[in-house]
Length: 451
Image 1 (cartoon, rainbow, N blue to C red):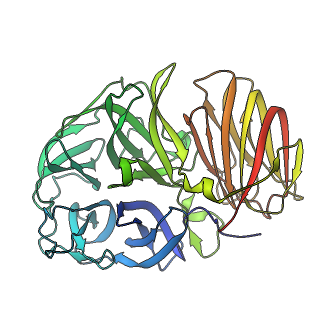
Image 2 (image 1 turned 30 degrees about the horizontal axis):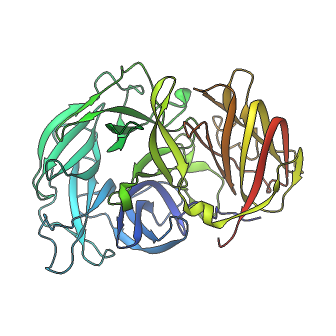
Image 3 (image 1 turned 180 degrees about the horizontal axis):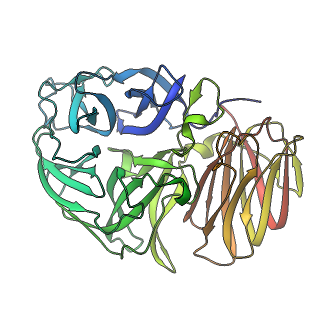
């Protein structure tokens, strides 16, 4: 069986964590990422770089940014400066501008670099462009164009909250507001923020603030929360009370997610790091550690509990699916990358197994919760927190439509209009060879071509 996912992005070798600089330009999606090319554990951070036309087939490019005298290159974002507001363009070509955190033992600050060939980057000679305001944790700038005001906006992590900034040229920034005090479930540091608009089914515009939070192992490790509210170009105001938690992903392995800038038709495409900090340095992969979640399109849907984010795999997945057969009570398989799409009436369970008696299962339990159980799924002795069962309480009752994408060692489940989003890794000692189902369920099994 294959040892590396086929549909999910992984580095050629070495360590990878947060996605950075997600931007679409001239037919290519650019994925930058936190990268340590010389080890399979976290270390001096670089920005790795890859491009794709379809978000499935990736071409690895040379490292985009390396550590320098100001420090490691921590997370950030990238924009396509089509109007050359920065002045980094040359008259014919417009730059991609990367905005990132310089990190060292003394401080974290925000810096920029630009590229006209979208591969080789030049750091700004007057970095940093935003000095540290006197706090320990000040990182992960997400920058986007605010059309109504015709200027750039930034949201950046600042300890237990986020700060907002604005700029006309990506070089000179002024602070405009803060958000977060009282909304921090982790009671710790917020990381990797994102802020973007989405329309409701009624055509109303809402803004979504996404924040990752590094929590203790007892609270489940690193997870990502989101808020729905309004943004006026200077500050964000949430619509809900801080007591109502909304998770981006109800599984254990989704962190530091962010969305692409400058996409066609303004689609909001989300990519996360499918890992958890409480065991990420120890997972049993070969010459690489770190895997990105499969890209998903975001939307807002109405539910009995109000507006919620909805997730769906990008359309490119449908073009390479190959229907094999209808799901039976038992099914033998000889591939390690596949998809199941089904409809369940109430309680059900699907189990992936092998002849080592390793079992990874998911479904809906009698309490109307989606669950994923990896307690006996394979290798787990690298962390006491890894073998566990995870739940997501359904908002809906009755029939459930779901998709389950398994790719060598990572599983992603979408269900109930995409309001259930669960990402979980499992490491069977050999590939799963059988699928068993229980309950009232109909569905189809797919493999993939051209991967």
